[in-house]
Length: 94
Figure 1 (tube, rainbow, N blue to C red):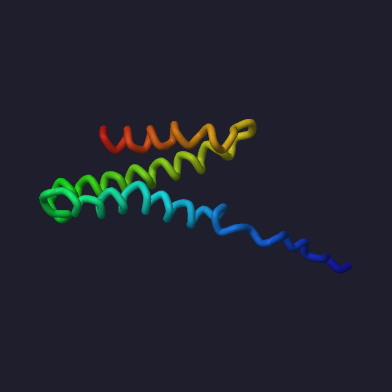
Figure 2: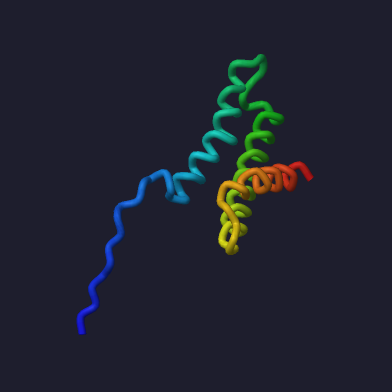
């Protein structure tokens, strides 16, 4: 018996998890750190580096939380983003 594989249409790069995570890291951690050179001081001050690292950890926690919660039935993907971001940054602050 022959089994034909069902090929799906090529998906957009925007819906891939790796692309979303990289974009979130870029917008949430790297761009604020790079914009630091506009202000007096250095990008490589300990406070700037600590903030960059904390933002990167918060984005990773928020992304993991969003992926964990949106698998439950009845959950809309868009309704999880803000609570996940608040949770990630709140845990990082604590």
